[in-house]
Image (tube, rainbow, N blue to C red; front, side, top):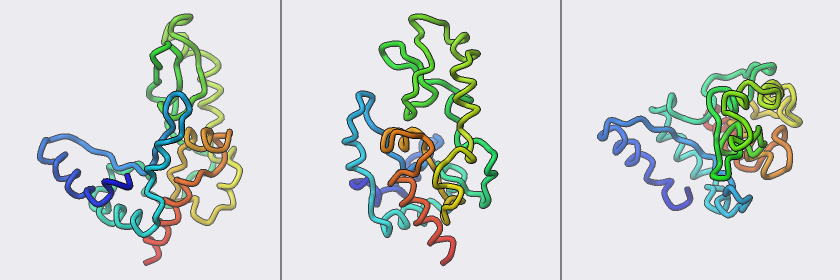
Amino acid sequence: MKQNYADVENIIQLSKSLGTTHRIGMNLINKNNGDNSPSQLFLDDEGKIKEVLRVAENHLFSMDIPVVQGKNISGSICGAGTTSLTISPDGTVYPCVSLKTPLGSVIESSVQDIWNGEIRASLVKSLVWENTVECKTCEVADNCPHCVGISQAENGSPFTCNHCDRMVAEAISELDSE
């Protein structure tokens, strides 16, 4: 992201010219082996984050951030494990490409059994805003994309704040007040 943040408008235009859809996301996740080197590419400059957000304003419906103020604190944080699953090369099934909580293995169980299983159901039920640690009192929570996978990788818990989401939420909040 550090290398291409200034190209967002051109990337959006390329996507449109090809007739494809696009999503703008600020989150960078660890490699499957836990290596966090991708986080070094995170655009950790609030001014530059705002530049990207300003360009993206015309494309809000494609952004990986909430656009409606006032989260339902009892609602789901994200869609991890609710609409799709991720299967790693070794057969381990995860609720999301970034949330590395194993739900089972396709070598030992069918995808249908994993989907209908208690582990997935319990995880999905737990991924609600009221289970977060700092979010209830955070002044920028309404604008936070809160990736539970990044939080888990960074802090060991999906329910804590992470550096990337905090910076993006602060930038969005400042833009909202301009």
